[in-house]
Length: 186
Image: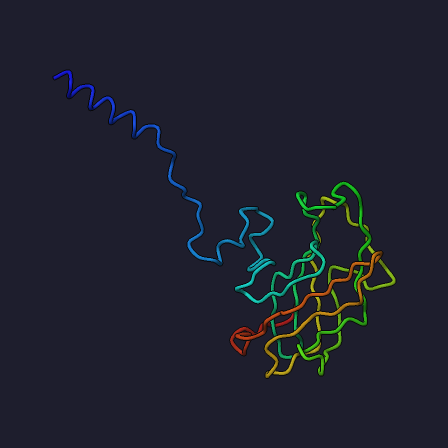
């Protein structure tokens, strides 16, 4: 009887010390890119998103959150925000941001370009807006409608250098953005 009691006590002690099972593990790759923060709930996708085709920005503070096609525009939704844990960032400083009115969408080979038509949420250069390091700015860019045969394009704002970081994004995928994904412009 003592042996049975010792065995049960040992078995109960082993099961009580096990770490809890992980319940917040993503079901698939799409869930991985959805941070559990209330500010992201209205945004369908976030950069970096290699599965969604939202491109690769040379500025770590820029995220392409969505791409939509309308009858007359190619619409890019972007977010500017400093990463608190990023290297070499000035999270407690400020940044002056604006968008170059000469920016274009360009096909991967660079043979076709589509001009910027308008922006919402971000001023056009030479105007600018001061952004605190902890502030998040979402904005929308409207370009001429890309041709139906264009599946991959790049956003080119300007050449970056040591003093100026441009909002250039390479490898934005428009494949699958057909008539079914067309929306009315805001």
